[in-house]
Length: 333
Image (tube, rainbow, N blue to C red; front, side, top):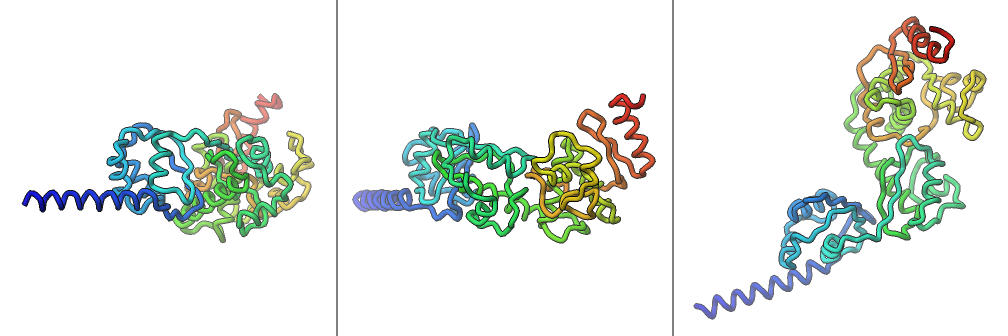
């Protein structure tokens, strides 16, 4: 009986060892080329395993948890942001998380930036391999598999971590795919009855809301104003679109002559949305465009502190202009 029990224990040990060797060295079938994972300080081994499942890296957490426990390193996982690349094995994950890789670089794309600023930030980044400096915007879009022909607004503003030497195309592709994922989800959960024909039109509106926002909490109210204008056929009359249409001609001052000079982006001279986004909108701006405030306001004017006064009639709006703009400029008291 004792011999049989001993034999079973030995057999179980052999099977467990064989399983461990197989599991730990088999490449993980990741869906994406790479995946960021941010391990928070104080994360337990169990929560790390579940996070790997939630982010689509592992199919189930228990095999990885058991492997790390057998290796005696359950308490050695280090917090940090890691870039997991296709072809990594569970043992490779274990080594990465316990040694705490410091080979990563990062870049931050700021909400409200235009694509020219995105490209400049990539060109300045010393951790990235520069492949697109001589590319046109359209060549970049073709290389990353984008179906759009204009790059503005297609890249999600965030901080991206990557292995040093990764190409700028890799970074842009991740930012593009992130925007596609977030926009698609937000579009599926949108309010009914919005005057958009597509998610792309919502992205255009979100970019306008982003550029008009001085106070983040006002995003839904600003979106509500612009949607009210669209519904009644009123022109959007928003300065940021005019500025975008001017391109390099804009010198920091917007003049009356600029407001009447027609371009594809001049929402004073043309009705409806401009043809493309004018900047990278944040997720909050996208949500505002798809879940606008219920308001009767058709106008707003800046108070000088980043916030706005909203009005439902032109008379109310004109009084607010006198109070907050003309008085501030010294033309009225």
